[in-house]
Image (cartoon, rainbow, N blue to C red; front, side):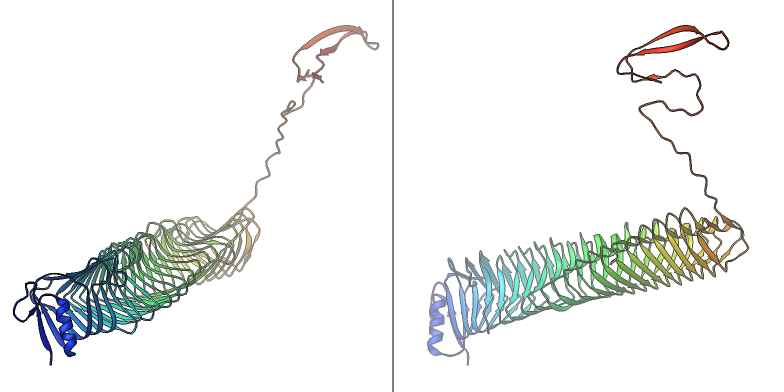
Length: 586
């Protein structure tokens, strides 16, 4: 049987003048108690034992309980608080501190100026419903919690924290303006369902120290840092969540491995999906729209698995850089201002059944010999510049890859290697495939149709090894080999009504070429004459006779004398030059 007690500031018959006196009376009886508190302000610090309910007799918020400093309500046992406002300052242990037992805050507001709103200690549990928590954080330390339909506003640091093996579920709640994180889960378990987080200074929701975090149907908007972050070997799932206007949509690092499904990241200022520092993660059916820098980034040892994701708008679609890895399947990348796919600096990436459309560049591979990209069933369409470009010492392998409507299909330069298997290039403005520098291009069953210039071109000291190539209706030439390009063309065919089948430099073997078009060997022009510039004397371009030359002089005096020649008796002039000591005469 619950005993009721009444509290009224003016006292009165059967009423207690303050809450403390009612609690003492209830404790003396040792029975379950309900204490009804009349509207007003009560300057008290309360300690509650046993089974007690504290309820406002008027509307929620009509009763304000506070103390000058420290904890306002300390709960031991089974304590319920309804409709009160609890306010305190510098309460490091919490304006409300649940020490043991079970605490319920319903339609209650807690204000913590320079302190903690609610602290639930190890072994205790708390349920917070339809309540508001302002200025301070709410902390579950090794405890259990259920939070429903609550508001957390303007916390000086983290709004809500679950730490040290706590287990907390948060439903349909809102977090605004946290000074650090909206929700932090550290070495604990937490589940967020239908929540909204806005305006945090750092990551809105973070899991660290091997935490386990589940996020379902939430919305994160207008945060200064990342929307979601999994670090330090944390795990968990994120599903049906929307992110708008964050620095990063989701960051995964330091061994964390979440599963992310059916999420949308829109207008992220840097990256949508960001995996780094040995982070992993599986990303399924996600969408990244208008990322400011990179939509999906794996860097510094990251290794995500990405499937069925959609990228549209922004600068770079999918990038794997700085010795990272990644596997990407069934993705689409559209309408970017930069490159669709990027593999740089010792990274390794695998792309399967990916489609890249309306991007200036399709794939950009650059780096040392450890930089590799493998593409299978990938389609590039409507690219402004080139579908696939491999430079540096990178190695790119294409299997059943198509490139349609662009400037150049596939290219390899510098010391790169490009391997093509059953690939097709259609309707390009310049050429189907190009190798330059000392690059190596190996193609099996390459088909180029309708190139407005050439089907395949090698220049510089590149090497071509092409078997089973088909070059159809290329406007100028099917295959062109310039400069010192060498290699082999075997069992290839060139068809069309005009142009040249093969224009080569004599360094490429032609084995079983099928064509009705002419084959021409390029005649290398004779080397130009060597020109030596002598800046200390004259330069002669033809024979010179009877010349008088002097250089390096400041003054020359010329005299002429006459003498008889012993043979014909004629007079011949013999020239002598008087030259300054620093001059030269010839």
